[in-house]
Amino acid sequence: MNTAIVGINWGDEGKGRMVDLLSANYDIVVRYQGGNNAGHTVVNERGKFILNLLPSGILREGVVNVMGAGMVIDLKHLVEEMGRLKEKGISVTSQNLKISDRATICLPYHVMQDCLEEERLKDKKFGSTKRGIAPVYGDKYLKKALKLGDLLYTKNIKGRLYDLVEWKNLQFVATGKSINFEETFEWLETYGEQIKPFICDTGEFLLNANKNNKRIMFEAQLGALRDIDYGIYPYTSSSNTISAYAPIGSGAPSLKIDGSIGIVKAYSSCVGEGPFVCELFGKDGDDLREAGSEYGAATGRPRRVGGFDVVATKYGVSVQGATEIAITKIDILSTLPKIPVCVAYELDGERIDCFPYGDRLERCKPVTEWMEGWMSDISGCRTIDELPKAARDYVRYVEQQIECPITYISVGAGREEYIKVDKKI
Ligand code: GDP
Image (cartoon, rainbow, N blue to C red; front, side, top):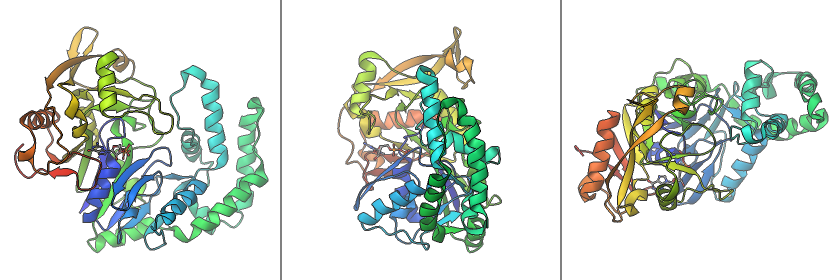
């Protein structure tokens, strides 16, 4: 059984929490794209963990974790992330972590380039996390990057890096900045040495595991609307976040996915710039933001929030090929007497229910309706019947609109705070 767990919206849907819960049913958890530009938050009996690079299965004993060929990996960040887990008693060994020799190395100059570009863009910026992700993916496609396997197999890696630094410095001329080759090489050697034991052909590992009927879970970072090809370009990430890319990005492109569990948040939130049609402003937005504590973890800045977006979510379900849905954070809506839902878009005076591309999306206005709230704490509910009627009505409405069965309802951040839907809602 090979399953992808993917975000349906703009990211931050609570994928980490669902992967942590569901990984109990899998032998292997694979990250197949992205880098340390996003974080998964997992709360379990061992504490609260924020994972940027490591697959969430690293927190489960007996699960083998794979960082696939589609990832871009900042070696220093990975070493530090492993160190933080070790401090909490979780060991990362070559038995429970395998890193693809085809994954790409994110170097310090990619981070530098990302920061310089954000500076140049000033107020026109796209909201980069400044972790070097766009520059390193760009270099990968220009065939000007180093792969993890180069640390093991390439005899003259110093020469390769020298050429790359020379080339990159030409692009830096106008900025007045330059890359120090010796420092970059030392960085590569220092952190590369610590990562080497984990590097292998993850394709071979996964195909073997698949042959032996091991259960594989593919864990995405970010959501469908951030996919480089199918998202709200250019306000997207630089990688393919969709489930169809999971086998390719794992290292074993011929693997088949049997199902795709889409994670949908009970309301909408969006970090950074770009069209966000369902956005609520004024008191409506403030109330929802307050209820969900939607403030940036590091900066404390208020996040953009909106009601559940039927149009965007239907599109997300479609591009993800979701076969079932887990809805998260429904408990956040418990304090709202009326719950906003963006039921359709209005484009140039016409009501539409298909998610448009580009400038057409920017021109859309939300058509908002309000549903009855339930105004009671539902975090203790463990069955459908325990949910108040208004909450059941809300979930049923979402299910009908997105035309995909809801199989999990998350009512809190803790591992056990969820309802497994085993009958008609
Ligand atoms: P991811 O990137 O999709 O994994 O999402 P995040 O890591 O940003 O998760 C969003 C936050 O919501 C985290 O702090 C989670 O612990 C929390 N969370 C996840 N599911 C629920 C839920 O059902 N209820 C509540 N209250 N919090 C949740």
